[in-house]
Length: 311
Length: 75
Image: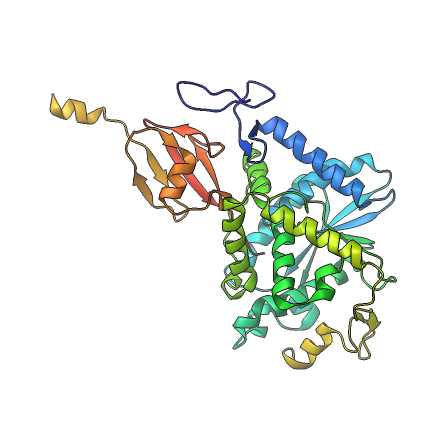
């Protein structure tokens, strides 16, 4: 049981006399900055180990938007990967071309890459697709997140492959994973519901790893704040169009009222995926007939977009 | 005498994510109670008191300066 300073109400760490910066609601445990940082690293190492995310000699591209999740991911991976022989990191940032938003986050990405000494590559939508996102979305703003998501996945894979990486690490956290479970359930998309982006796809997709998948968004923010590295950045102007924004808000309320909701959603999905393993669900990976890129149908989503919104 | 008493009166100031500041008196309460009063889900923000991050069950009072920072998203 953590102690409390009777005068100022400050709560002490459950392990040492230092002030607590976070309370774990399930166990009522309190941790100071130093013990929370150590706790976070150990849990991420366990996630990496449990899912065999990193092997000796891997060259890993770290998707670095400059926001809080990717900033924490890069900081934590630079600390963790030296334990693996020959593992190298390269940070990749996608400049979608979103006025009033992306230039600030790119500056933040450049700063953190420089401070960690990690090689940094920036790829732009305009360089890759001939138009920036603002231009692509004129009159289609309500489709912003789905269009951006498809093009950003393509841009990240392209940048990672150009950098010689064999894996792509993303900053997806527990909240993101739980939101995806709920969104895929709402859409009735069973294939996407159980698909594991890190699983073997016959060499078609660059495997993705999500070392922060067991860490909540709040924990990431507290970690960065305690290190004075919380990036004070604007929110993407297109967020308001996203289904995810609504799911995020409702799920966050449920998690507050019913602690463990997000974890239960992700655990339930993993159980179902393991039961359904090996059962064909119509999600075979093909090659796009137009460009040869991997896809689930006959023509890839990127080509369909290039054929419509990018012309 | 009255003006002297007023000049030493202590009060807590809460700064919300939109940068607005609110005087909430000096009565002690938890950070979580303050967040709920302002209709904020504690899972969507981090809170600092006097510049230091604190857990939501921290008791604040007197002249504490409480800053609420929204965990930005999308990017």
